[in-house]
Structure formats: C-alpha cells, structure tokens
Image (cartoon, rainbow, N blue to C red; front, side, top):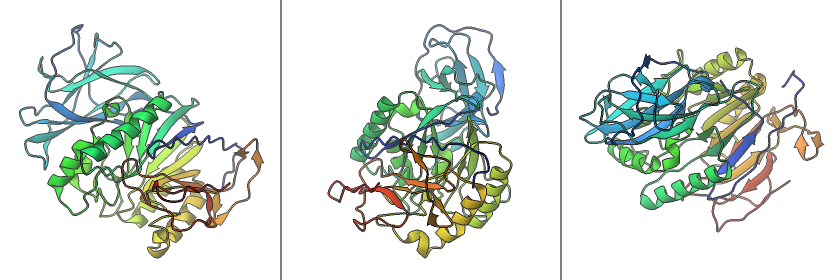
Length: 413
C-alpha cells in the first residue's frame, strides 16, 4: 500500500459533543484562482451592513493555501458579486475581487453569489466582506485563515448528516459546531460528509428553507466548509448554489450535481470528494487520475455512503455492490483514510486491505505504517441518530458507538 516509509501518525481525538468528531491530523496545506482588482483608497470605518445571508466559505482549489471561495445569498436588488479582503480588522488597504453576476434560486426573491479570492498568503488571517460594490452595500466583517503550506501541520473538524428540518434541529447543529470550534479553535476547515439538508423528494423550495437552517451557525462565516453530496441533498441545484465549488470534472458521468466531485490539497494531504449518488465508475477514473498524479504524502477520500457500517445501513454497501467496487480502488491508490456518514452512528475500522483486517504494529498506542485504509464514519451532527444493529463487533470494527442515546454505547479495542 505505502511504498514510502512513514508513520501513520493520525491522532484521532474524538469529541463526542452532540455527535461531532474532530480529527487532529499531522497533515498540512497550499492556493487557487480568481479575478483581482487592487483598490487604492483605504477604508478605516466599518460600512453599513447590507441584506446578505447564508455566507459560506470553501477552500480554494486545487490548492487551498493561498485563496478562499465565498458564496452567499442576497435579495434580487443586488446582482453584482464583490468580495473584499484585508489583513486589517478595519478593512484598511483591502483588495477587491469580482465574481460573476448572481444567479436565480428556488428561494423567492433570493439570488446566489460566488466569488473566489487568489494570491493570498498561506497560514494568514484575513478579514472580509461581501456585497455588490456599492458603498453602503457591504456585509458585516468576518474573518478566515488560509491554510498552511506543504510541510505544516493542520487540524480539521469532521461532521455529517445535519439534516435540519426545523429550528430545533438548526439549534442543535449550531451547538455541535460551536462546541467543536471551542475544542479546536485553530481548525483549518470543517469537512461535512453529506446530507446538509433533509428533503430528498425533489422539493427545491423546501430544500432552500432547510439550507437557511443549515447555514445558521455564525461559525460558518469564519472557517472553510468542505461538503459532500448526500442522498438527502439528492443532487439538487440548491447544493450547487450554496457552495463555491468547481464544476464537474471532465469525463465524469451523469447523475451528479455540479460541484459535488472535486479535489484539493492542504499541506501534505490530498482530499478527494466523491458523490455516492452519481455514477461511480466514471468517478473511479477521475479518482485514479487525481491520486496518481499527486505527490501528496496523505491521500484522503470523503463521500457520503460508508463502505463499512454498523447501524441501519449495515449491509447497504454489500447489497448495492459499492464495497466490492471501491475497496480495490482504494487499495490500489494507497488511500490512507476514507471519511463517510449516512449511517448516523460512529465507526472506525481497523486498517483494511483486500476487505481484510491488516495486522498492525502498535507503538505507544499508535499504528506504525499500516498496509491498509482506515474507514471512519461519524454520527449525525444534529438530532437524527441510529442504534447499532448488533452489540458484537463486525470483522472490520475497531470501535463503534450507537448514535442514539437510548442505544448501546459500545467501544472495542
């Protein structure tokens, strides 16, 4: 699996606070693209807030250390898309970036805006505002920190299956993320393994309502989010409208919404996001091309549906054939870690290769250079969790935990 001699020094610190799991990893970061416009006048007074909402940050791609992507919604009177960024909290000496004109959405009277910033400094805190370029039409000032360059360490927060249907769900999700941010205040990004919303019937208006709940946490204004498309997201246009992500890669087959299949690097890690609700065979071709042409030390895949589950979806990957289709590919490419959700419970597998547990050399509690892939599935980040199917460990289960507070709380060594 790994030809290079390296230690898998993945510290998996699990914060079980309302079902969020935080991965502190010995990983690192890198840049992007956009349209730059130097602004010569300086601003030292905070502008009046405009009617913007649902602001979301995403990493710049394919290299995340020197840029950022921003998306937001506004009323229909604001069609231009502008982003300004400064190293100063009062926005002094800002740089302005321009995106395309806003596009219509299924939400009545709402437009979707996207702008990308490039040529920023790695591992640097920036302040930003979004608007349409008019003097008084700027949002409040928020901040983000660009990722580290190759060779640097970084942390990230891993969540899944928020699925907020109402205000109570939104409050739980907001609390979950807030606890995670307090526990790991310097996290570089939040990875979300899908089902950002709950409706999967094709009701675009209902999904838009649920996205207002999903985007409620103020913490999302200040940290990059990396979303996967889940079965409840259902490849609807609202997913594309809410996240500033690249279009579908060349050669990838039908079925996946734009922006649901992408990759980027952060430090020495390559992240590849798949869409398990779209054609997997063409994604395999894309995955091999990206992984085989990367010099990243760590290769990580995130997707919604897990290959190894322990609750309601225990046998899904066997029944639909996805386990037998994908694990040989992950073995071939030397994938270190696969992150998933969907089963609303927690599981970490042993290192797996050829669908078999790999023997490990444990030193001081850490697995040294295992020849296999670890599969990690996190619980739901709001109010929807599942019980374990069985109290006994599956052949692949290193640790598992019921998502439901009424279910068994079982951990294995």
